[in-house]
Image (tube, rainbow, N blue to C red):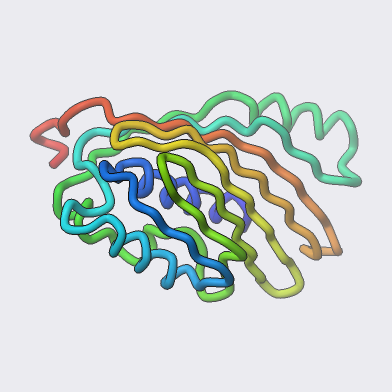
Length: 183
């Protein structure tokens, strides 16, 4: 659950990163759909994203699972600290009208706050799934061609009351136009 939401949040950050006009959005206690709509409106006709090839890197900086044996925690931490990179082609059509699932979260998530202004973003989202609650904080910088985001996620009340804390860094940059065969 947590990794999927973090990945979705990274997708949200990518959408914000490509906004060339650096729009302003300030939402409090808002649904995922409310925030998506506010970002789309603030972005205007240019769309949310700058089309092209994007390269992203995700690095798990810290992960803590209380009660996990120290040896297992060390192995997990070591494996997770290796950056994971990916490339994606974003077409003009996708940039203008990203699907609803492009924004992080689901019906069980709300933003405590979402602020985007002057190339900076600060947000906190809260999600519930059964007995588990996840609070995710996102902060960083963005431009039309890159972004650098740090995300912190705290999950409590999961299976057998298990808790988990994770800090990750997401960096992405536009590397050029898409290859013809990828479009």
